[in-house]
Image (cartoon, rainbow, N blue to C red):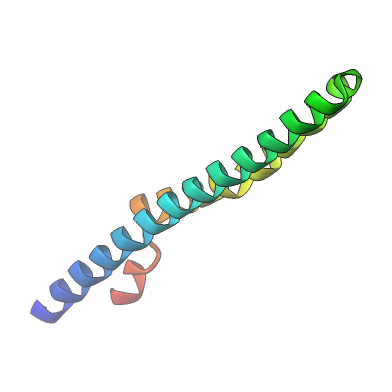
Length: 91
């Protein structure tokens, strides 16, 4: 019984480390991706102002695509935080 409690605590602590890595690295990657994309959009808009409406639609689409993996990662992290399937293996 005592070993089971120690294993549960160990699984929960490693899960918290994994959750923090998923959210923090995902946020950093999404921020870097959006920053690079927006800088290229501003370069293109400065060179050819008549293409701004066309480029703007593509920028908004790409913002959603860049943010999608981060949002999926947050969803998976919340699943591990509130309904950890790894704890089921210990029972």
